[in-house]
Image 1 (cartoon, one colour):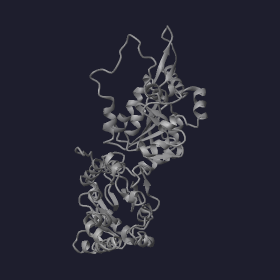
Image 2: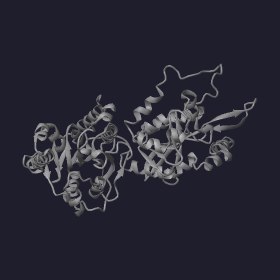
Image 3: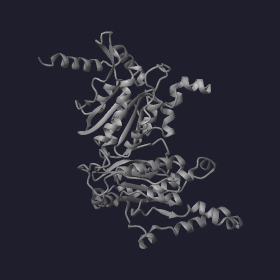
Length: 517
């Protein structure tokens, strides 16, 4: 006699597990414009590559004779899949069951997601929708409660995983409590503009505790987190969010023990864009488009910006340069003239540390007038966050190239140069301890006030000092590697990419950072 009956039961249970919250629960999910967790997994992964772990994990139901009647499936789905042929781990709450609040079986699978990714050195994508724990079922006597005193802290693997594999979190619907904590414990987070909210506590809890009545969108919708820094990017809908997740992972290795994948490109490394010659206006007070400069230098259509709506004076993202993934840092002179605000400094530090963790070279386009000043900047502690950004840069281990595009003033400029940085200077650059305008106002205020025409004397002094800040003396003194025609930037950087290949071979493995301000 064989095991046909038991095998049939295995397949029956697997089928039951895929029923999720049943037809009614799935229909409700669709009516609210959201996909189910299994539909999300299919939308993210290469077709037919999902390999689920714990297919029959559930809360079983038995009658008095211990006969199996059915079960409630685990409301967390986790397993392997592939993105562009590379293995990843993907997991997410099943909101059609208990609103995503984990049942006992789902909790175990949820905790396992990070372990699975670290064990097999595969990136992790979380699809989050749920409210974390629930008070229902509490207060019952009998049985065991709580975790054993000898168990590892639940959050330990969540923290450790970030030092080993790339982690992406996608907010697909309402994300609160523990799932919200998980959302931000990632290298890249993105939320659906139409269907997602991210909340520490939901409207009912907020109203009960604080007497404030707000909707989920008012508390933690896209319009809130576009500026809060809680999520990096917004997406038009879930499928756009998954597309961004796929693109993000394409720039990174599968783990810190590997190199980022360099791909073939048809973009000529010797390409020189004529527009770069005119990209920076001669009038120092006229703004320009730094993102356009980045796109003209990098491989065509390879720039992927991260966190554009937070710390907006600093630009961060990934791109490819002659096929090599690189981190991009730049200043946006159209926002506070590119000054480093408290928010921009936090974004900057976090991005540098991510590039350092996964050994991505950094290319930095410098137009830095200094730290943001004024009463609001002081209230926000800008100098502390700014110095943390400086420390992250000067302690980085990855190869670093800095292109001096326009301005470079004050302590904040130090954040734009890693150790042994390859420094290229454009003829449009102006550097010094302070911007000319501010420096003249401080150093010559008595002379200006005593002049017959103070405004004319101010302009005269500014022009004299600006003439003395020509980039040619710095190039003559070997204070920069090269003073270049802006059109030569891409060819010069592509040559640098070839030079650093042996260095990248030696950079694999975990990194560590000291305490920073």
